[in-house]
Length: 299
Ligand code: UTP
Image (tube, rainbow, N blue to C red; front, top):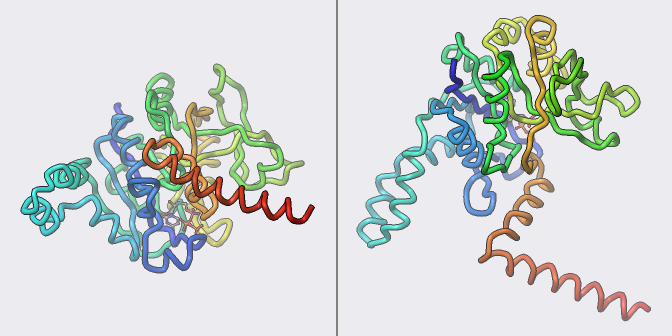
């Protein structure tokens, strides 16, 4: 069956961005010219998903408002003859059919995914963590997972080969065998292993195609790391019951879940925008010149 639903868990507290996220949804932080969440939704739509399900929490109203109509603003733009902007605003609210489900307490990513059960219970569905922004215009990363699911069935998770020194920052899979270059059957997975204990250097990234069998597992799943219901723990159990495949995605990833990652993503992508490139280069070159002058004086 075609995968049409994509779940976006966005109810996390975003503590790494405090104090900004005390009131503002981190998914609404700008990545160059649109909010982070927009990139994920665009990717899901381009991957063939036309039903977007967002699992939201208390401080996330701005996400709902962003994708909704804003009649006041539209009227104002129309009356001032700003047709281009008016069309742009309308296009955002017409972009996707989005269903919002509230996760009452932030009990973890696994629990957030479980909140989508009433909508996804009988079918395979996509999951996208918006912090991971993936860019591949030719083949969106979620579509790469969907293609594998359509070919061989089962659940599919996005993988990235990381440096051995970085494995302790990620969930790492233990591959059983490869069916072709970059596509592995997953035997097991471990959360943030030490370098010397890591079963591979294949790290789990924020895109999944999941079997509905994940729901009973999530319901049974007790709290894991950090006292939260972890999605990885349930997928680990799923591996022993049904095929779970890992795909080393093709494309670029920007980690917007930390301040440093978000800033770096903004700089990198701004450098690719003709009208912003000079702004970044000017600021950076002035800083370089300052440092050079200081070094020359000190010599
Ligand atoms: P993170 O672990 O990145 O947590 O969640 P977070 O709250 O967003 O950010 P930090 O770590 O406190 O800075 C991974 C994904 O799971 C969602 C988050 O919104 C994020 O997309 N999530 C997490 C939920 O939807 N509910 C939860 O209870 C926890």
